[in-house]
Amino acid sequence: MSALRVGVLAYPGCFASEVFGVPDLLTMATHVAGPDRAGYEVSVISSRRRVAASGGAALTVSPLREVDVLVVPGFELLPGLDVDAKLASLAPEVAAIHSHAAAGHVVVSICVGAFLLAEAGLLKGRRATTSWLFADELARRCPDADVRPERLVVTDKGVTTTAAFSAMYDFALELIRQHSGAGVARATARVALVDDARSSQAPYVDVRLLPQPGSEFSRRVMRWLDQNLAARYDLAALADTFNVSTRTLLRRFADETGQSPLQYLRSSRVHRARHLLETTDRTVASISSAIGYRDPGTFAVLFAKHTGRRPRDYRAAFRRGAN
Image 1 (tube, rainbow, N blue to C red):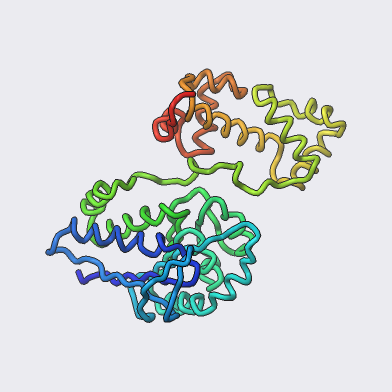
Image 2 (tube, rainbow, N blue to C red):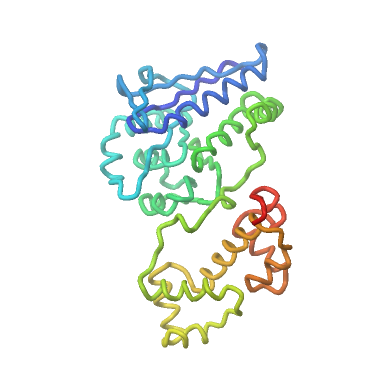
């Protein structure tokens, strides 16, 4: 096997850590594999002569060249950012991405680098992912894509997208498995202290950081549900509380939030359970009861559906110490 040519596409405002994260792990893999195994020829390339990453860090770049794998890092997507203007300013990079894919080479995005791939037309008809924080925005901007916000890494027909920041290591480890073998990938993960057994970003989602949908009516309903997590869900009683019919309640809540009150209640209960699992010594049965589930088994199934982990596994991974 010959060295795999990997190019990282640097551009103004990209995250420097996402420029160097994949190359650094590939360098470790080369050392782990030894001199008798084909390694990686890594370069930081750009359509520009000078590039300043986020925070103003100057990057040394090489001109665009043909590579086997093109990695597109993400950028700082702040609230209120004009994404259209940002992408328009990166027209040379979008053209380079499109050209690389058209030549039949692999394209990979890190985090919101997926927005550049979408602008280049690469996500149409493909499954994709990005940071859970911006997955809805990506789906809105690219309705022809099948956005999977729970996935860490998605590969579909030569195009790979990853979740936020550290998911670049999940991608890099998979690349190492394919090019250098499972043993080298496993050893590299151990050397770098990188988790090589993750499969979902669902356990990391914090709904409090997401833009809150709805207007005053749905927010009042959500507040009431949050304050009565342990109460039995009774749609008729809930409608009476807000002096509307059940049909009106469901319609207005769905129109404003895109979900039903019961769906919101379940996600709110899971959020509370996550907090209790992370910060207390309470048993799973006790937590289940505290958020309205008499049967711990039913609660465990719901929790796993939302987070990708059973309650005890979640506590083992995210335990912060009891209050």
